[in-house]
Image 1 (cartoon, rainbow, N blue to C red):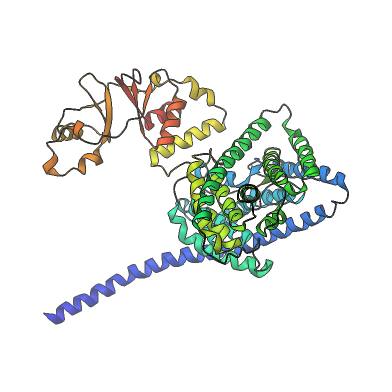
Image 2 (cartoon, helix red, strand yellow; image 1 turned 90 degrees about the horizontal axis):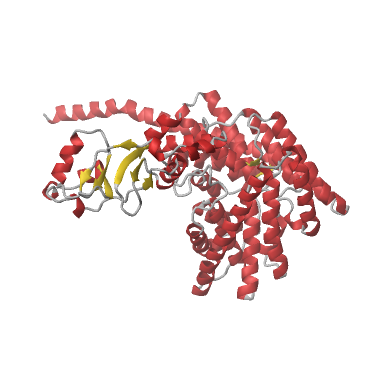
Length: 574
């Protein structure tokens, strides 16, 4: 008998071997694909950085001729605009991160190959000739585009295309900043304001590491900013200042994002949009005439502030204001680039202004904390912002940066540069379908449809409901006869007091099935009136991740009149 058992165990192990090899093959395929993407993106990003460096070097050599400072941004924005409009498939200029997320959420998960080439070149010209933007936007597009091209040739499934889009984006960030951890975390954080794309973590890790090695091998291993020494651990006083700074930075981030969105709207309603690069370039040049630090990336100014350079408070405030204006003009007037680096610039100036104006002494750690906080506030990438300052300025800044960035992340609410393409959370299929439909209607200019269509035209009347005095067993019996997941709970007078899901009932032990519904913690219902628009209903569904909204006669009396499910809206609008 013992021998027979041993033989059976041996056979079981041998029988499981093919499954083990299959798993090894799957992981090997993921790792191999990710490393290939990292290699290709690393080489491509190095080429992009060298192109930018060449253009910027020629631009800065003209500084002695002051009029060129005014004229070069006009040339840069105009050429970049014409390149995108003439050669790209998706003919939108502006922030590369925005386009990546739009394709991730609302597209098919890949970037057209022409755009992969054209838009990074347009960004290099924009920034190289004085446009105020960052290299990370085009690096994300370049990385995502290269990954898309590789995956389509490898026959990667449609379901995995989005994952590898982020894998390439992570490699692009890693290579351009020489910061692999930042690349990994940014790629899995940026798609959502309060959620992570966990399935992209492993492939993003391998692609980022390979791209980083390529970058430091060809561009040098020095960090983009000077390392900040800090001989002693941060004190309570430093932590207190980091907390206050986080609140101030949150306010600054809200202003920055609002200004950016305002400039985008202003540029979109101009009578002759083709003139935007000229007018925007002239305004940008005038700002550069008085504050040349605001043009381009601004790495030199950031480096000075991280070194503890004591600039006048008035100059620092001016740099904050005009950098925000210059960036908003650049990316709304035909230029292409990113918003991450301008956030670093504004954050460093804000940190230096706080240290000098409030603390009375320049504190490098406070400057790095402000950088992390502004990135966290404007992009909703908490972990990536902390990793970035740690990798580019040294680990001594981690704790103050964590305090400031966390404070700014939550204090700024849902204000972000990417609000229209960055949902708060990942959604279930029906919620995601409503989000995609809402975005597409807005993109096609059908906002009036959302305003004109009223709740009363879409709602289901006489919905199935549960009375608050029912015991759980009675509620379960009603649920058995209907194919709904969520049920409204009402009083005898039909006043809505809450809602309950099947999952809530299934969690209740058998011995508590004699409890009444009004003794249970019910879910808060989302309510609208019959005369409100479907646009408002969709806003509420997206904001609260809900697939049901209840219709009441008025919000005070809460008399239940009907219900709207996400599927009802889809059927009506498609």
